[in-house]
Length: 122
Image: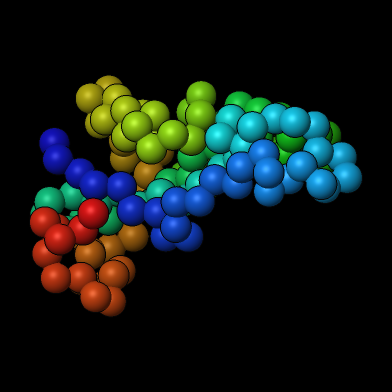
């Protein structure tokens, strides 16, 4: 099944240089300690949303409260490399659990104001 990933907030993973001067920075590379919202766009125009979290990010967020952590449409990946996220989505589709993880939010023409066609989405 063909799909494309769209990052509604942009695909930006802060680098170590972005954090190096911040108090308390522990030196973890952010590609393994971060989260990203992801739209999954299918050829027929359906759009689903999910949020990719790394294990380290979940641990950090849990440590803030100490009791629990949850997020709707959450899936956990080893890192936030685009290929890792793509592979995770593909595996969720193959394992028939995609719709349990991701929420349908509408069709591309309604979600993306400048949407022309699936082929033009990079």
